[in-house]
Length: 321
Image (tube, rainbow, N blue to C red; front, side, top):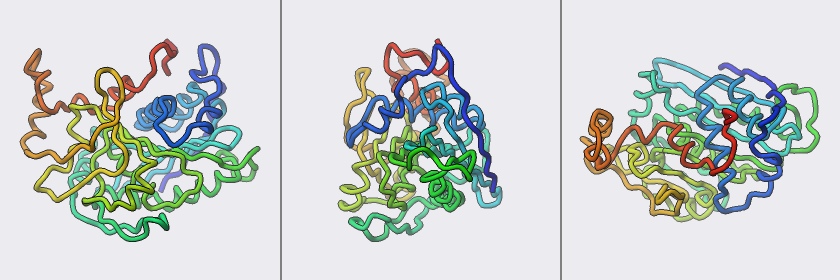
């Protein structure tokens, strides 16, 4: 288990992107919030990088002087490649838990995604008590770092993550959880297993299905109302695992990018034809109308595609332009 800590830099002009980001995160309600979506998509995109990069990007967005911790566990033979980042605002009132998605160049990480099969998970919410069956490979990666994540969250509730002996100005009041791809699946598993009173929302991007369906109504009504899933229409990953590999379903509210805006939509269903997976890759090699007409295209899945779609117009980017 690897645990690293750092403090984010103090931003200078043209940053921060959001002058009162902590205030906006504290004020966000029970509905999807465009600022929250942008901030969490940015965190989910850059968590494929190192700890200092995450701290720098979050400081640029508006979490100046944030404290960050990276928790990672790898076990090659078990297809475990689990990484989580916890970002704490300088005042201590806001925290963002971000899970890294499938590592593009890591074959073992892809094999873990393909390890379909059911594992039983006990739902934490007392109003949705009981057990669900969830994707085995996703759950194993989630469990690998879960205990340490909980320890860091307990620390963040009263103390500074970068200096555990120092108290924060104010206790934790709002927790957001996010992730892209596999990271989104682990974010949903966190929501299902942890009854955190401070949990404000779970925002995922290009997330595959986690629950061996159908999803119980109680879980959908209690935990699902805090989950906001973002789906680009041609992204094949939200339709996985495909039909024939077991029955899977989404939990939470889905938003699709339609007509240059994020709109509520019916949950994505499982991919009907397994051949659509290689076809989505081959779509990269086609051009013009043939590429545009492909049902799925894997180039819709990378995190920067989601970040481009959720970034509000007229804002300075995380690059400063």
